[in-house]
Each structure stands twice: as C-alpha cells, then as structure tokens.
Image (cartoon, rainbow, N blue to C red; front, side, top):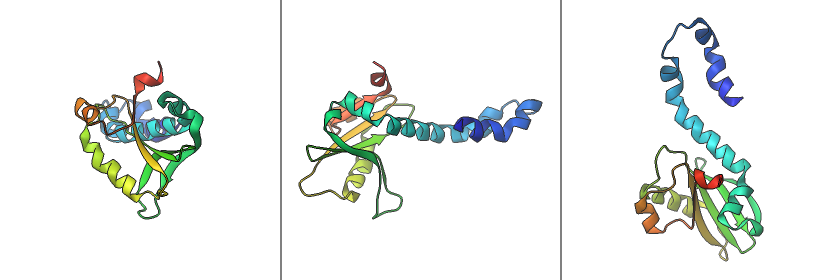
Length: 154
C-alpha cells in the first residue's frame, strides 16, 4: 500500500493518459533505492524475533527495538537486542545492491560510542544486507552475526 501512495497515486493521471514513456525512470528511480531501504528496515524490525532465531540468540532476548540517541538527534541504531546475558546486539540493516565492505566499520563504531551502555554489558555487532558482506569485511571478523537475504528463507 505504501508503494501505491508514494509512486502510483501521485502519477495516476500521467499513467492513465500514457503521456510519459519513461515515467518510472524519471520519477520513481531516484527515490526507489531509499524506499527499498526503508521497506527492508521495516521488514527486519517486524520480524526481529525471527532474525534472532536465525542468529541463535532468540531464547535470550529480553528486549528489542530501534534505538534513537539522546546525544545526537540524527543518531539511530536500526535494531538493538537486549539479551539476558547482559549483551546488547547492535543490528545494522543495510539495503544495498552489492555486498557491504569494511567502509561500514567507522559508522558502526560511531553508533557504539553514542550508545548508553552499562558497565557490565557487552556488545555484539550484527548486520543484514540482501547481498551479505564482502570478503574483506568477512576476513576482518568485525561482525559477530551476519545474515544475507538468502539465509532468511532457507
């Protein structure tokens, strides 16, 4: 429904009259990738417990949700799991049309610095992307949990 109201309804008269042949390329494509990212993030939040099952810690989850920082109004962690083991799992949801590389590390490190973390809590880092992570990021072993879209539907 969101797609209809964002892309179809505002262009309904043009579509109906067939006046524009490249309507998708000119009006939708520039906004398409951010919309897919938003939709993917919403999907992951809605199915957060399923993601926790896939990563092997669902039985320990005592709280979860997006986190919006108080120190920086632009700061958000897509999904944070609070585990009974006094662990916070920082979960980054990225919708890219390729594997994610090590360039993501400074962004995650900044988010960790801005989090309110208790002294007795540990941090694990997780990421999901339709295409997973590239070889360089995998070799760095930076993330504790990595999922790509294929693993969701196995």
